[in-house]
Image 1 (cartoon, rainbow, N blue to C red):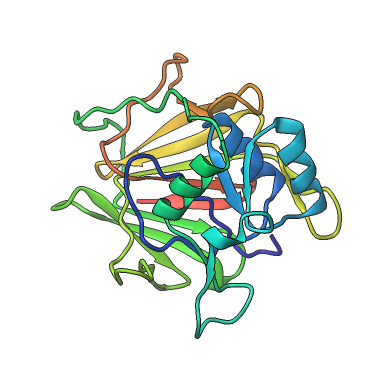
Image 2 (image 1 turned 90 degrees about the vertical axis):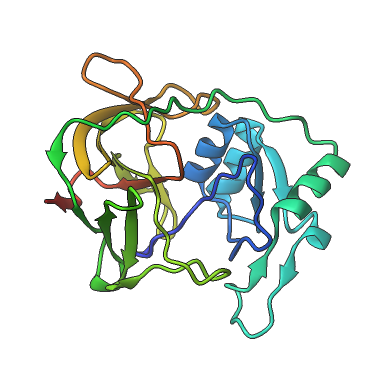
Length: 244
């Protein structure tokens, strides 16, 4: 939005004592959350984002309605100071009567990926302040993430973010209005999978709002990911993505 990268975090069994900053609902995030049958935590939203919350029937855990399960962190400027935790989200959604979550998940394998060398990845989202880089750490079999030329640190534990998989998805992007992006995340397109220091081309598909986004090989089979954290970078068709 406005050249600034935004994130949506998907938590399964892992616990996090501090999640944030929690921001507003956007239409493409609602579609992604619906595909995982997720309980969607957010703080208000754009007009279209809130319309999609109702249209897709996502389990809605809006801070505007469930304020007691969020908190404002002192010393951080608003609106970047709203936080929650997995414990609060789980207990609050249960009390709210939101349904259990069911989704397929992904396939995993410890077998090394065959493909082109990809020890370094660069994604030019917009300006240099939001340039994303990854550097492969062969000892830990993870990609260290850099944002705006600096190591991207987890603000809670002060450790560098280092996922086991980096998936890049190219999706058509337009504007709903002057302030809200329309990312065509329901549909299909091309992308890349990075893991084990290698790269391979993939295709992605998401048939409907309530279907999980899938990552496929040329034969149409679901690709297997490295066990561990997955970061999915959604970019425009023309966004520069380079690796070596």
